[in-house]
Length: 113
Length: 110
Image 1 (cartoon, rainbow over the protein chains, first blue to last red):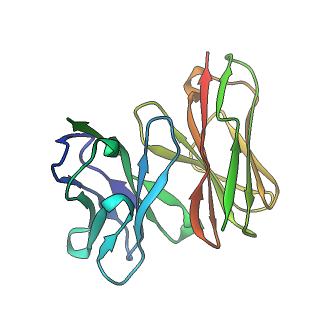
Image 2 (tube, each protein chain N blue to C red):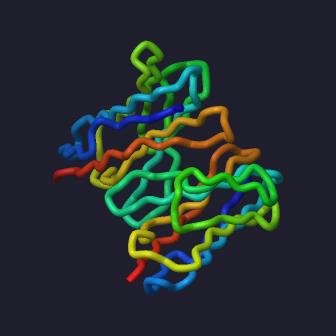
Protein backbone atom coordinates (compact mmCIF):
# COMPACT_ATOMS: atom_id res chain seq x y z
CA UNK A 1 0.00 0.00 0.00
CA UNK A 2 1.19 3.46 -0.73
CA UNK A 3 2.12 5.82 2.09
CA UNK A 4 3.36 9.38 2.41
CA UNK A 5 5.52 10.62 5.28
CA UNK A 6 6.20 14.20 6.28
CA UNK A 7 8.85 13.93 9.00
CA UNK A 8 8.46 17.48 10.31
CA UNK A 9 5.25 18.28 12.17
CA UNK A 10 6.16 21.93 12.81
CA UNK A 11 8.70 24.25 11.22
CA UNK A 12 9.40 27.83 12.28
CA UNK A 13 11.17 30.09 9.83
CA UNK A 14 11.99 33.80 9.76
CA UNK A 15 10.40 35.97 7.13
CA UNK A 16 12.74 36.23 4.15
CA UNK A 17 14.55 32.99 4.97
CA UNK A 18 14.41 29.90 2.80
CA UNK A 19 12.03 27.03 3.50
CA UNK A 20 12.23 23.32 2.74
CA UNK A 21 9.51 20.84 3.64
CA UNK A 22 10.30 17.15 3.43
CA UNK A 23 8.12 14.46 1.91
CA UNK A 24 8.86 10.78 1.40
CA UNK A 25 6.59 8.38 -0.43
CA UNK A 26 6.32 4.65 -0.62
CA UNK A 27 4.92 3.23 -3.84
CA UNK A 28 6.00 0.51 -6.25
CA UNK A 29 5.78 2.54 -9.41
CA UNK A 30 6.36 6.25 -9.94
CA UNK A 31 3.41 7.92 -8.28
CA UNK A 32 1.73 11.14 -9.10
CA UNK A 33 2.82 13.59 -6.38
CA UNK A 34 1.21 16.76 -5.09
CA UNK A 35 1.77 19.52 -2.59
CA UNK A 36 -1.24 21.30 -1.09
CA UNK A 37 -1.47 24.24 1.28
CA UNK A 38 -4.24 24.80 3.82
CA UNK A 39 -4.64 28.17 5.47
CA UNK A 40 -6.43 28.22 8.85
CA UNK A 41 -10.10 27.29 8.49
CA UNK A 42 -9.78 26.94 4.73
CA UNK A 43 -9.87 24.12 2.21
CA UNK A 44 -6.91 22.79 0.25
CA UNK A 45 -5.13 24.69 -2.48
CA UNK A 46 -2.90 22.89 -4.97
CA UNK A 47 0.62 24.32 -5.04
CA UNK A 48 2.14 22.00 -7.61
CA UNK A 49 2.10 18.48 -8.96
CA UNK A 50 4.48 16.00 -10.56
CA UNK A 51 3.35 13.37 -13.04
CA UNK A 52 6.45 12.79 -15.19
CA UNK A 53 9.20 14.61 -17.06
CA UNK A 54 11.36 17.32 -15.54
CA UNK A 55 11.98 16.40 -11.91
CA UNK A 56 12.02 20.05 -10.78
CA UNK A 57 8.47 21.34 -10.72
CA UNK A 58 7.47 24.98 -10.41
CA UNK A 59 4.27 25.87 -8.63
CA UNK A 60 2.27 28.86 -7.54
CA UNK A 61 3.31 31.43 -4.91
CA UNK A 62 7.02 30.93 -5.70
CA UNK A 63 7.17 27.30 -4.55
CA UNK A 64 9.05 24.52 -6.28
CA UNK A 65 9.54 20.83 -5.58
CA UNK A 66 12.07 18.27 -6.71
CA UNK A 67 11.28 14.61 -7.35
CA UNK A 68 14.16 12.31 -6.44
CA UNK A 69 13.42 8.70 -7.26
CA UNK A 70 16.58 7.41 -5.56
CA UNK A 71 15.48 8.94 -2.27
CA UNK A 72 11.73 8.44 -2.74
CA UNK A 73 11.37 12.10 -1.94
CA UNK A 74 9.43 15.10 -3.19
CA UNK A 75 10.60 18.04 -1.08
CA UNK A 76 8.98 21.46 -1.32
CA UNK A 77 11.11 24.60 -1.31
CA UNK A 78 10.73 28.36 -1.34
CA UNK A 79 13.77 30.66 -1.49
CA UNK A 80 12.27 33.47 0.59
CA UNK A 81 9.15 33.05 2.72
CA UNK A 82 6.53 35.70 3.31
CA UNK A 83 4.35 36.03 6.41
CA UNK A 84 1.40 34.89 4.28
CA UNK A 85 3.10 31.50 3.79
CA UNK A 86 2.20 30.55 7.36
CA UNK A 87 -0.11 27.58 6.88
CA UNK A 88 -0.22 23.80 6.91
CA UNK A 89 1.32 21.98 3.99
CA UNK A 90 0.37 18.51 2.82
CA UNK A 91 2.23 16.19 0.50
CA UNK A 92 0.12 13.60 -1.29
CA UNK A 93 0.51 10.75 -3.73
CA UNK A 94 -1.96 9.28 -6.17
CA UNK A 95 -1.81 5.57 -6.82
CA UNK A 96 -3.59 3.52 -9.41
CA UNK A 97 -6.13 1.75 -7.20
CA UNK A 98 -9.32 3.78 -7.29
CA UNK A 99 -7.28 6.93 -7.88
CA UNK A 100 -7.09 7.49 -4.15
CA UNK A 101 -5.03 10.40 -2.92
CA UNK A 102 -2.93 9.46 0.10
CA UNK A 103 -1.83 12.35 2.31
CA UNK A 104 1.10 12.82 4.60
CA UNK A 105 0.42 14.01 8.13
CA UNK A 106 1.11 17.62 7.24
CA UNK A 107 3.72 20.19 8.29
CA UNK A 108 2.63 23.36 10.03
CA UNK A 109 4.78 26.36 9.08
CA UNK A 110 5.09 29.36 11.36
CA UNK A 111 6.73 32.52 10.02
CA UNK A 112 8.51 34.82 12.47
CA UNK A 113 8.72 38.54 11.66
CA UNK B 1 -13.36 23.06 -15.43
CA UNK B 2 -14.84 20.91 -12.71
CA UNK B 3 -16.28 22.53 -9.60
CA UNK B 4 -17.26 21.03 -6.26
CA UNK B 5 -19.98 22.52 -4.11
CA UNK B 6 -19.98 21.51 -0.48
CA UNK B 7 -22.27 22.70 2.28
CA UNK B 8 -22.73 23.81 4.93
CA UNK B 9 -19.42 25.51 5.71
CA UNK B 10 -19.86 25.08 9.46
CA UNK B 11 -22.16 22.92 11.51
CA UNK B 12 -22.69 22.44 15.24
CA UNK B 13 -24.67 19.35 16.17
CA UNK B 14 -25.49 17.69 19.51
CA UNK B 15 -24.30 14.19 20.31
CA UNK B 16 -26.79 11.60 19.10
CA UNK B 17 -28.25 13.76 16.35
CA UNK B 18 -28.22 12.71 12.68
CA UNK B 19 -25.92 14.17 10.04
CA UNK B 20 -26.16 14.77 6.34
CA UNK B 21 -23.43 16.55 4.40
CA UNK B 22 -23.86 17.00 0.68
CA UNK B 23 -21.33 17.41 -2.07
CA UNK B 24 -22.16 18.07 -5.72
CA UNK B 25 -19.89 18.18 -8.72
CA UNK B 26 -20.25 19.96 -12.04
CA UNK B 27 -18.11 20.26 -15.13
CA UNK B 28 -17.15 16.61 -15.39
CA UNK B 29 -18.89 13.30 -15.90
CA UNK B 30 -18.46 9.97 -14.13
CA UNK B 31 -15.92 11.30 -11.63
CA UNK B 32 -14.47 9.41 -8.69
CA UNK B 33 -15.70 11.08 -5.51
CA UNK B 34 -14.15 11.06 -2.04
CA UNK B 35 -14.87 12.08 1.53
CA UNK B 36 -11.89 13.00 3.70
CA UNK B 37 -11.80 13.98 7.36
CA UNK B 38 -9.24 16.08 9.15
CA UNK B 39 -9.45 15.83 12.93
CA UNK B 40 -8.00 18.69 15.00
CA UNK B 41 -4.21 18.74 14.65
CA UNK B 42 -4.24 15.67 12.43
CA UNK B 43 -3.70 14.97 8.76
CA UNK B 44 -6.29 14.06 6.15
CA UNK B 45 -7.86 10.64 6.34
CA UNK B 46 -9.80 9.09 3.47
CA UNK B 47 -13.20 7.92 4.73
CA UNK B 48 -15.08 6.84 1.60
CA UNK B 49 -14.67 6.81 -2.13
CA UNK B 50 -17.01 6.10 -5.00
CA UNK B 51 -16.26 5.18 -8.60
CA UNK B 52 -19.90 5.36 -9.71
CA UNK B 53 -23.57 5.59 -8.74
CA UNK B 54 -24.34 3.34 -5.81
CA UNK B 55 -20.71 2.19 -5.50
CA UNK B 56 -19.19 3.05 -2.15
CA UNK B 57 -15.95 1.83 -0.61
CA UNK B 58 -15.20 2.46 3.05
CA UNK B 59 -11.62 2.97 4.07
CA UNK B 60 -11.98 2.94 7.83
CA UNK B 61 -14.60 1.53 10.22
CA UNK B 62 -16.63 4.33 11.73
CA UNK B 63 -19.94 5.80 12.69
CA UNK B 64 -20.50 7.30 9.25
CA UNK B 65 -21.89 6.13 5.92
CA UNK B 66 -21.84 7.49 2.39
CA UNK B 67 -24.17 7.32 -0.58
CA UNK B 68 -24.03 8.32 -4.22
CA UNK B 69 -27.57 8.60 -5.56
CA UNK B 70 -26.54 10.55 -8.68
CA UNK B 71 -23.34 10.69 -10.71
CA UNK B 72 -22.78 14.25 -9.49
CA UNK B 73 -23.90 13.83 -5.86
CA UNK B 74 -22.08 12.36 -2.85
CA UNK B 75 -23.62 12.37 0.63
CA UNK B 76 -22.02 11.70 4.00
CA UNK B 77 -24.40 10.63 6.75
CA UNK B 78 -24.65 9.47 10.31
CA UNK B 79 -27.66 8.24 12.28
CA UNK B 80 -26.19 9.28 15.66
CA UNK B 81 -23.22 11.58 15.93
CA UNK B 82 -20.42 10.97 18.43
CA UNK B 83 -18.08 13.56 19.92
CA UNK B 84 -15.26 11.91 17.98
CA UNK B 85 -17.00 12.75 14.70
CA UNK B 86 -15.95 16.38 15.09
CA UNK B 87 -13.56 17.55 12.42
CA UNK B 88 -13.14 19.17 9.04
CA UNK B 89 -14.77 17.20 6.23
CA UNK B 90 -13.60 17.61 2.67
CA UNK B 91 -15.23 16.31 -0.47
CA UNK B 92 -12.98 15.69 -3.46
CA UNK B 93 -13.37 14.75 -7.08
CA UNK B 94 -11.06 13.00 -9.55
CA UNK B 95 -12.35 13.90 -12.95
CA UNK B 96 -11.43 15.27 -16.32
CA UNK B 97 -9.41 18.07 -14.80
CA UNK B 98 -7.58 16.05 -12.14
CA UNK B 99 -8.14 16.26 -8.42
CA UNK B 100 -10.39 19.03 -7.04
CA UNK B 101 -11.39 19.69 -3.43
CA UNK B 102 -14.47 21.33 -2.02
CA UNK B 103 -14.17 24.14 0.51
CA UNK B 104 -14.93 21.84 3.43
CA UNK B 105 -17.41 21.59 6.31
CA UNK B 106 -16.27 22.15 9.86
CA UNK B 107 -18.40 19.91 12.10
CA UNK B 108 -18.43 20.38 15.84
CA UNK B 109 -20.31 17.80 17.88
CA UNK B 110 -21.28 19.11 21.30
